[in-house]
Length: 234
Image 1 (cartoon, rainbow, N blue to C red):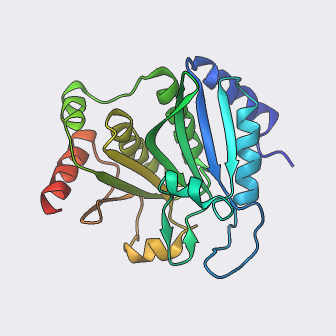
Image 2: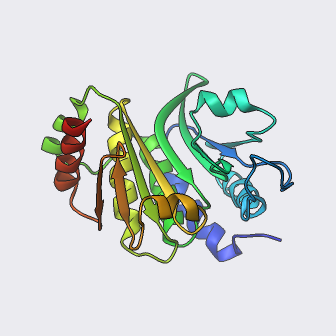
């Protein structure tokens, strides 16, 4: 059964008409939902496969590849797919640019299905990668670009949170402009154990390098200060 309605498809097709360069969506989802040791139940893998397939059909500059991380662990390792005690955090999406047929991994990740408000975030990210346009202020861009140490940003969200997309987009924009930064959306309800580990009682909640955490969709310059603090503490 289709995930997107005809009205949805028309709106998305119009939004993606701004694409310039191709974008590849690498979707990590087990081919079957077999429950086994070291494997978590993937409640929304089938829905995500359907959604991403429908999305790829709406613009010829958008490509999709499906990967089962359990049958292709080498590929999962190549993208440093996150894991916990229950196995890989699946479903997951890696967004990559395509330049002369070669993938360019910007460190932009989605863990969990990008439903609700986060579907708009997915579209914004696709357009950012395709056009090269972001919304960072010049001073913030300059400071983010000069970061020369690894940064991992996890942003916990829920589909019904209207403030979460801003927090996720900030992390993804930071990752887009600096290869040392990785920004991950994490759907809090799908990964309950990870949410409990980080005491996620409100969203959005951002965790940077596992040493600094804060709640709320704060301005980009304030996120930068938190990031700098995390690097000092590392």
